[in-house]
Image 1: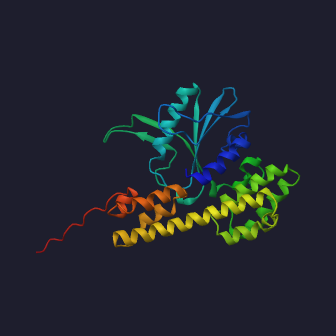
Image 2: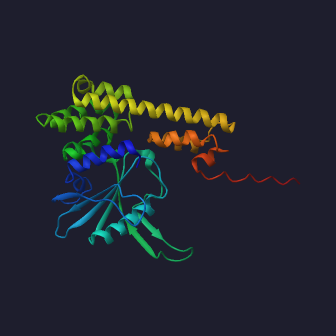
Image 3: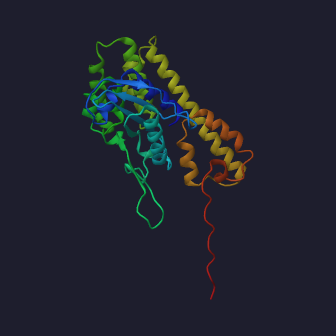
Length: 294
């Protein structure tokens, strides 16, 4: 998952870990965040929880905002490594935050098999598509998952009512908690809605100019503006370097990047690349077959 949303969602999860097994439909139980590092491979799973039993078990969560064909295989890898490390059964849950992350291979089942043979491996995982979840389920759930409500199964016309219900739920809560939750809400709404709509809906929050919430929202807005400019510049640089407009798959890949550092690296790499495919590690188009002449 890309960095801006990574930090926000991990913060929500760390603040209210018990809310996330409940979001996935599992019984509420004492839950704690544990180390997500997997020392035998490069990197780490997005977030890992230990849920008390009986029996105790591990909940492995992968947040996703953009398409990734390797996701089922990676989830299977992390699941096995986490089970080996913690010696507990592991449930893996993929949380798709927007429709752009959807792929046909995200079926909840990953199979390994040789051509013409029965699968030698069948691994099952859960997929939660936030835009399909009933909004009332999130409005009535824990505070840790409340900022997901505006990007659940709601229409733009329903959003003002959703925001009002969120305000009602947060009334009387500690100011620092309210600030963090509105900041997360603002950022997550950016996955689906235009800035003007978000700012109009959150005008009352943004009006608190001296609040921590306001300052955090401004910072997030500046970050998103920088991302838009970096994507635009990369597309212009590529068009100039390669002498052709980007193919649809290149445009989609660049628009899905929410990591400013990654975009800056690509802006340097474009000077050495010879094609959009080389720049973005995309499959090269198959050569066209010549038609036979009679």
